[in-house]
Image (tube, rainbow, N blue to C red; front, top):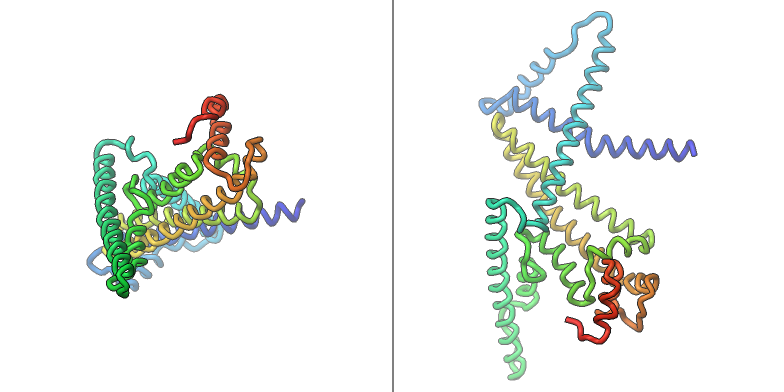
Length: 318
């Protein structure tokens, strides 16, 4: 037990250092650089070194203790800065996925609605181009002529780059998560929000670890966006801060899209693989591949609406 607690404490300390203290220390160093150099001489690092050297504690009795206290205070301040970035990252994640954008205050809601409308129009144009080209190539093949023009796969990819389903969110990442839930509702008549907590209890360790790792990568990517916002504030005193913020934001944007796609794919695959096992635990009869009736009964049971199963037993599902 002592070895286990020691190893656990070591891992917690490593995560504390890597997620909070080190990024916070780098940001504090950037703040010091920005306030010391300014716009006039943004790369005069000799002046920065001279300025830092003037901050050493006065020599005499207790110098080492004062230095230790200063280092501890700096570490705590860096950790606090990391906590602020983590908190801001949670807000960025909520804005990025925009699941509840219809309830946002009016300026944000108006912008989000404009984005959704714009993305829908873009997808309609891309989808129309794909369908027209598919029909043209099909007509050429039916007439015995070789297909010409752009590859259909590139046009299909252009559609999915906008959104895999009809856009309902102002961002690609939000629509990627929504598309997963939409397909499960359409194909299995299954409410993912109601079913996922129960399904999570049945998942083996391997898929659990993969999903948890993907979720952690996604959280780190949105936190990196928060760091980009914080570094952008330094541009008020030091213009290279804007360059650093732009590079961090671009990296965070790419990582967020990749992590969202991976996380959504893992969750959707887990539902398809283990929904039959969940049905067995709930006493829902399954014959062959689980279908919409199975998903409907599972959803009703987990939503506390068991009476709907009997009421809809002889009705065609929507």
